[in-house]
Length: 367
Image (cartoon, rainbow, N blue to C red; front, side, top):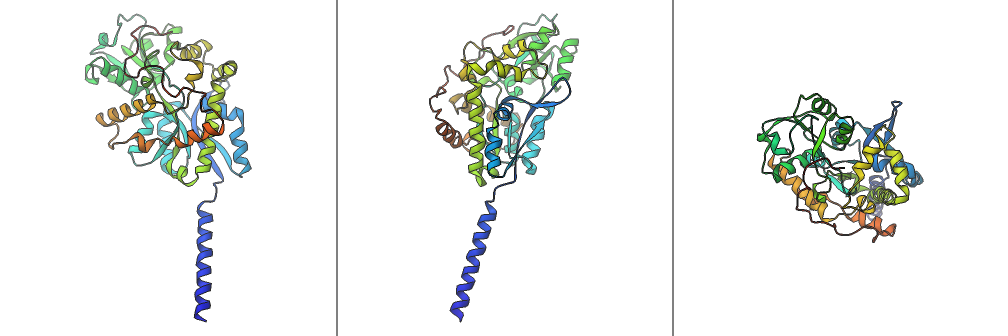
């Protein structure tokens, strides 16, 4: 009798264990991915960047639907993308996000672990803009002057690199923490002597509201402003098969963007919000970079160099208070699997074409 009781108790514990294992790995009903949106002329919102291509392709939503999982996009306003996504990762309402390097470091240093799953292309440029009647020709001409920089945004890292390369520090200027909209108005009206911003600088020049005296355009790849695909570490560890689907969709979208025949469609998608074609085309133009390599999702050396410098600078300036390493932040295995699945192992270059230590080439309008 005792033997039978022990047998049944053992079977019951085994079944309970199996039940717990199944429930612990049960697929989620919904996956939420965050990214920036564009405001259309009619006031409606539309996804931007790689997320817009993924939505257009429809492959990811279809694959998740086969598993009974809903794909939900979480739109973030560009003025508060970093804080909104970090809060979503912290409270568990987000699983993946496409956003910048600096806020990603901030959330990890704060104790919320995320993984960089796919580097998002070669990166974007930043520009130093002055009023149209300014006589300043370089950052040195602005010593002691007011420079508007939106602190904590990805382009602040580029601003720091510019200062370091010229032997300057924040103490050499009057730095004003102003968002891009207010910063554009301030430089146009002459209320600040300079404004550090992304490709919006081209629009200011076109409107004769400012002029570019420095740009990271044509500079080394590790100077670029980066936006990547990040995943919550808990989700990635618990559902690696679903994380793989997300990464594979990202690589499919990168492959589509990298094909010249899709450039016109991509341009139309990028200018839906009223951003002029001339601005977008100039932001894409780079004689040192092929169209294909612009969209490379590889973990190339310049990605590592960029983040190693970003971690160092963020620690020194107390933007983060915990040391981080690329070994713990990066999860390249999913990208490697996606490249194999899609037979794209040789599509992009494995090494950067240029050195990553030189500074961008000089001042002046980068067109």
